[in-house]
Image 1 (tube, rainbow, N blue to C red):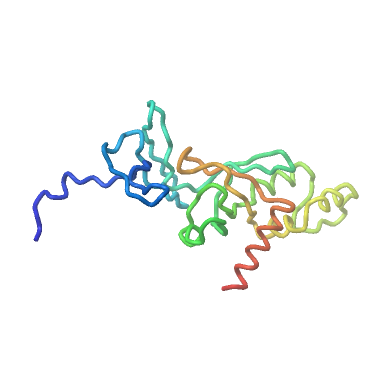
Image 2 (cartoon, one colour; image 1 turned 60 degrees about the horizontal axis):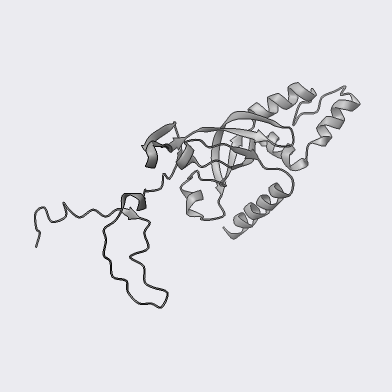
Length: 201
């Protein structure tokens, strides 16, 4: 039977208290106080790739959180070259914590994403006068040296137009998806993970 208005007063919130948990010995605790405002939790942002949409959330002490619901670009740094550029996020390819976050293309901290390589390619070509992915006739020794300095794994990515990067900000907290381009041992580690994932499919 349905009781009109029965569920109106029942508020199932996300709570971070431990009163509802059992004791270390396994005994039940008696609950003698209600939920408190400072114990509240909020639903996760589940930030997706899309046209920018950020909600402002007022938090304890009048502070603000910026809950990114959709993001399409971020500020990514290239550590070995000490530069950063705003670029488009193309795809989510790996997440150490949960494959479901890859399937749903959810942007979270330390998600491995593919970003548009164009801003970094243009900067590299301007600085070193080297055309990445193309052989130039009459190249000087210095230009050849600069081109060779770039790791083969990065060259392949520049040729494809996409770079692997890791998100280092928290999109659901600060409303941004900033990160850094993967290089060296870290890049090799994630490339192995991605190849293993392809084999298992």
